[in-house]
Structure formats: C-alpha cells, structure tokens
Length: 129
Image (cartoon, rainbow, N blue to C red; front, side, top):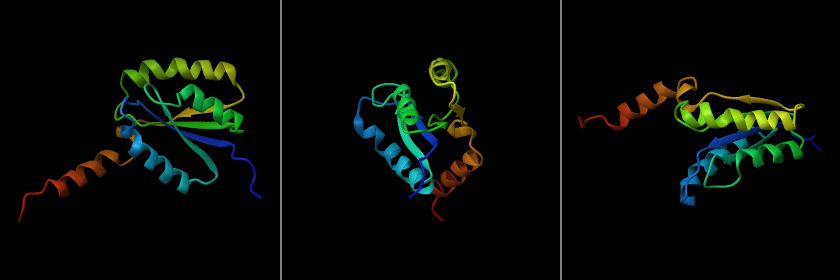
C-alpha cells in the first residue's frame, strides 16, 4: 500500500459566478493529477467558487502534505498575484510553519508557453492556401 501523499499541488484560479467557467480547470486538475499520482492535486479559487485557497491549503495539511506548490492559473502576475496572494500565504505560513509553500510562475511565465501559443495561433489563423 502506498504511503501518504506529502506533496500538494493547488491550481489557484480567479473563480467566476458561472460554474461552467470552472469546467476546463477541473479537466486540467484531472490531467495533472493523472500525471502526478504521488501528489494531492486540487483546485482553489480567489472568489465566487469553492474552495478558497485558505480552505484548500488547510485540507492539504489535514491530508498530510508537508510541501505545497501553488500554480497560479492566471495569465500574468497582476494585482491578484502581487497583492492578494501574499497576505493569504503569510497567514497560512503563520498557522502552519512546518509546511513548505512555493508559488510557481503564472501561465505566461511557464517555460515555452508564449512560443506554444504563438505556434498554435500561427497554425489556427493561417490563411487558406
């Protein structure tokens, strides 16, 4: 029997009033979880949808995670990442100092992402030959 998953990965997104907005995020979570069976992979939202990041972090700790990576599913490092995320993480770190928390790059800063999108748009928007 495998041991407890001590690594957590939280996909952190904005959230929306329309629950359908989260369908692609749930699909992303499933895909990432399938590739990382050794990790606890969950979603969290800034607003409008549950769970909040605070709740997802607490759930990860309760599940035994000692290291948690947060993947901001935001295109760029704007106000929510620069202003809203740090106080949430500060509060969490005070409540669970034994847990290592790491924030991964936003989508536009992921290696190869800009080239990947540019290539896809080049193909999709190519004029007919």
